[in-house]
Image (cartoon, rainbow, N blue to C red; front, top):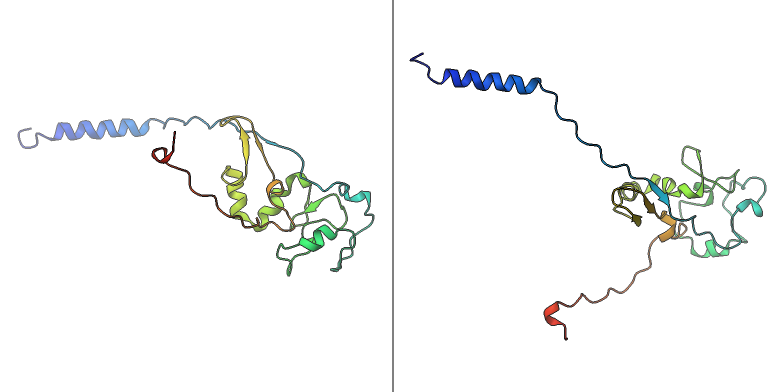
Length: 174
């Protein structure tokens, strides 16, 4: 043993490493379950929903002027050169939306429809970064749909003039 005084220490380290690697890794505690609760139904215009109150049968599959929906017709600015009503609204069931694969979707799940084109916003919305949620940080949360803040027919916010920056406490008068 005179030639390798470090050998017992090396063997002890190797034994300890082997023993530790045989131990199962500790299981991390799961994050608390967060339940999302819809705040309120989408903001429908008065007298508009349910659509089947006026519409019967299928939509005509051609673009046309909207006689009754002049509020939508006049402000539709959602890629209006490439989009029209039946890209989102279902032609057979007027009280439903539809995804690109044809799956029907209630208006209360419109965020899934928006997310097909606006994937980055949808991802951020699901994580609570985009949009508004209120409630407990580790429990039940209430969320708003995209249409609570954005008009689905003209979703871009109108430009607003920014407010001046807040005053520093040293600049405030008492």
